[in-house]
Length: 288
Ligand SMILES: [Zn+2]
Ligand SMILES: [Zn+2]
Image 1 (tube, protein in one colour):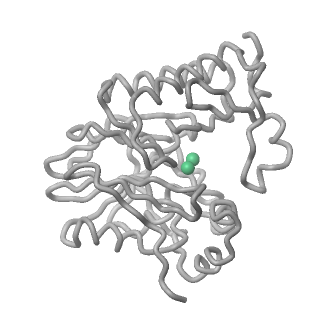
Image 2 (cartoon, protein in one colour; image 1 turned 120 degrees about the horizontal axis):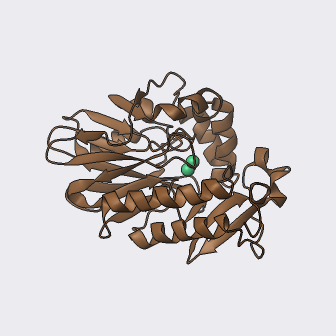
C-alpha cells in the first residue's frame, strides 16, 4: 500500500513545534516537540495507527540527539508511538490503565473507527502500519520533575482528574504549556462529584500560578494556541457544576460505541465561555 502521511506540523518558536496526528478532520491529536541543545522531547505520542512518528520528528529535529517522549496521561490516543523513542515517561498512577486500555490493541483499532469517522481506507492502512506498542516501558515522571534538554527546561505539573496520573508539561523558556486532556476546549471529567469539581478548579488555578498569565496553552485535541483564559473558563465551569448549577445543561454525545449505551443520558455539557466540561450528572447534586 502506498505510504500516506497523517502528520503535520507548525513552528511555534525556534525550539518548539506543534505537531498533529489526524485520522479525520474532526478528530486530531496535538503533540509538542521541544528541541534542546542536547535532547529532543516529544510531548504525547498520539494513537500510533499510521507509523512513522519518529521519522517525522527527525525530519524536523534531526537524527543526532536522543529523542525522549513524555506522555500527558495513559489514554490510548496519547501513548501510541511512545515505544519509538529512546525513553518514555508517564506518571505511574496511569500505569494501571495501560494493559486494558492505553496499549490494548482492540481498543486502539476500535477507537480508530471513531477517530477516522469510519474511513475504511484508514482502517486498512492501520492494519499494515500501526505501531506495535504492547511492550512500551514507561518510567515514572511526577509533579515538579524538570527535564533539562539543554538550554530549555520542561516541568511536569500534576493535573489529576481526566485521569489519575494526568500531567501538564510547561516549557519555561518558551512560556508554553502542553495540557493533554487536562485542559481542553472540551474536558471530560466524568468521575467527579461536586467536591471533585471544586478540587479540580483549584488544580487548574495552581497550574496557572506556575505558568503565569502570559503562557500559551496547547491542549491534546486542539492545534491552535489558547491563552490562560481557556484554563480560567474551565475552572469557572467546574465551580458552577460544583455549585449544582446544571439544570439547563444539554446531553453530551459519545463517539465510542462501547460508551454509547447507558451513559448517553447522563453525560452532559456545561459551558463557561466557549470552554466546556463533560460530566456525569448522576455524580452531581443539584443546587449543592
Ligand atoms: Zn484522555
Ligand atoms: Zn485525548
